[in-house]
Length: 493
Image (tube, helix red, strand yellow):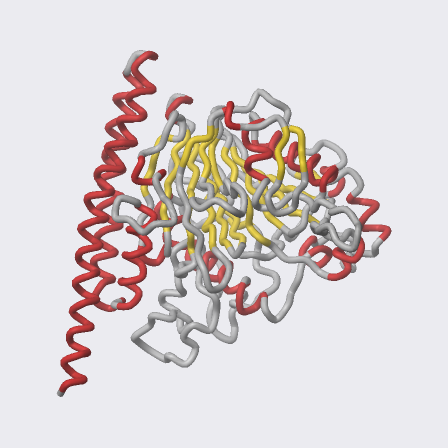
């Protein structure tokens, strides 16, 4: 799936939190309805069977409760996508990434082969449909998540190239698949952030550490031999660059992928490098954009949401630009697009008790026209307004209300933008106030009262959200209908 990811180390964030966030996007021409739910331990079977690849994998038992963002309409599998488990480990999967023929020829993807011509079917590997469900309920740290997924990849393989993020209160790890069975993972530096735009991204890898102390690097057990035997290291100085060895620098990357990373880095580090003009250090088509950077100031959830909603504002590439030279409008694929299905930002707050440490910020539909809202993750159920999504359009569903606001605001951009901006600011301000209020209340409460207060807080936040979303829907509907009325009047003149 086409997605965009940002990871923020604990010393790069405003409150010492680790933060991982990803836009989950559908492929071109469609979108996928999503819901925010809790998956209980007893819902996990003894043996998992993939809908798409038909692979069957025994599960270890002793599953932990977890939140998830599965597909709202059945038929193509679970696609749990993003969540937090009861051990306060967060995970988001997956960021579809790229490879090259040298890798895929040496270790082909494990693709499902249906039964035909008298031959039995051959199951495929694991993929985005499966990964969160297979890993998140069974891990107690980010590092443990990397190792469990790594073992699954080596045993069962994968049918696609993917990037996966794991987080706990201390660490963030980023794992990228390499061909059908190989993988590498790098720990995000505490003082840095990482941006990922559908392209293999790790730009340096220490094999000595990966096969030694394993402090900051992990990989599949035979990666060193795999690189050597298939002549994958293209470096002249012996310093492995995984992008050159395992990734791609296609013309399509320069339109679809690298410009997104360029904009995020440019926004968060505006003064570190020259980003624009003929003398720029980095441009939208640069193949050597840094995988991670130390930000110029500490980052907030609102900063993360902004870059994951962006459409090249302030540049000639903004498709909504009404100013300056418009010859390059829409030249590059935006981050905030109509195919955004949801955004989940998982925040692990170190200064709060464990039962309210994990907060999930959720947004549905196009990030260019929506708002995110925070919920406690350590709960037994999620508010119906976010969990009740079905294939039927309904104003009782935050997903569908968000989809309607986005569709109408896009069609009446100039007039509706002010309503969307006020909507986002209002929801964020009100929900932060409620979160602050309940942080204090829960921290002071007796153990037997805390679970009910977490549920109460989420319900209160959802109620405030529903009221403000309905009001915004009315306003953008008015702007759209007003514009249509004026158009009809002009046509009759």
